[in-house]
Image (cartoon, rainbow, N blue to C red; front, side, top):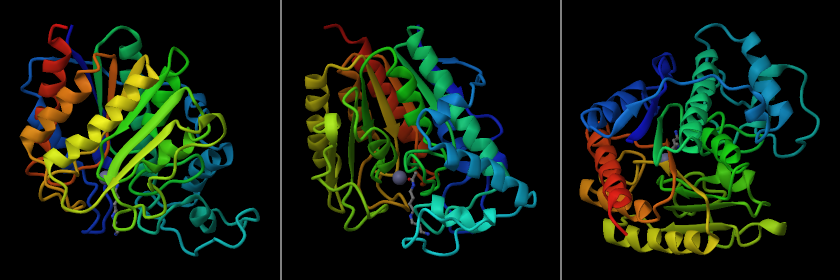
Length: 336
Ligand code: Q9C
Ligand code: ZN
């Protein structure tokens, strides 16, 4: 049996007009071009799942807002947050468009009708891939956009709307413990916050230090979980300019923690913005480093769900994704 591949069809309708907005349809095309020649894939069509799976990790009012606000939008309208609502977060203005900043972590991720449709599709793809893992596939890859790992219980932002990987991890957690590896250059604040008080989902992230990298407000080393979840979140923030070798040292720390945790499933947030010359990052990883990262995760030899997150250099996305999955495959096949 090969690796399952679930690609979000129709993602192209989500494109933000700002020329500096890096989360574009070309990203997914570049990745697909890079990996489609591999013989390991069994392509699966995305299935539709009930919205209850989203409500299991996201706030009901947040979800209702994200759905209802579309009614005030023209087909191509982009709604950006306006005020900075840090003073009174409980009494929201009645105008839905004015509520946007109360549900956002930043000021650059717009809500649009198409963003909503494609974000729902990302969730469905992640759940389809999770189901393949439950059905016995060794690894499944949800190749999706928009990404999701910055979306918290009641916040969108960082190019993300719904946390697809958290929805899928929560779905898997009904069948066994889950260890999440966030490999994106940016801290996985979404799943950290969503699972912060749980001890059946271990969330881990290696990322640019929040003193210098988005999202700036979380990803610090001392954030280690709360309540029964204390000790079940692990952050390894690193400085700018990290190379493949320094990255692996951090990744191995995560693997050690995961081994101690004895998960039934691995979930990987596959950000490729750790690559050399990525416009959203500062690190220096090359194709051979992505292969080794895949091997390190694969050496756990556990059923693995991979969800696509960031990565913005159209010239290297495909080759780096391919190398990651080659490494994952090699290590999972290896005897022992
Ligand atoms: N205009 C992901 O990689 N950078 N999100 C600041 C300000 C945004 C990264 C841009 C970084 C968001 C999924
Ligand atoms: Zn990122």
